[in-house]
Length: 106
Image (cartoon, rainbow, N blue to C red; front, side, top):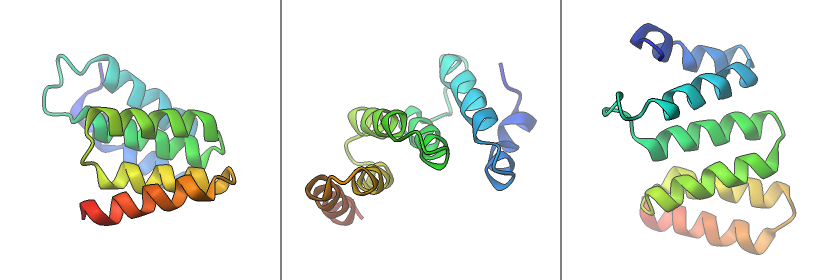
């Protein structure tokens, strides 16, 4: 289980471009969400999706953003980020739909 000091260092992993370690740590948090009731699972899946996006693993990023939306259909950031993945994958229609939904939710 991650301690609070480790959880606070996760943004630092992004600054250091250490996306594999960030993914590993976010997955540890997700595995312990029963003990970490103050964590929003949708936000964690969104953050993990960002790490996959930055690692250029579009399929895993898409899966995590989609799951974040499944958990919380009002998560505008997850729609925006999934729109970015759709755009990078050449799905312009999907990207526009997600960007529009993100904008509507703000």
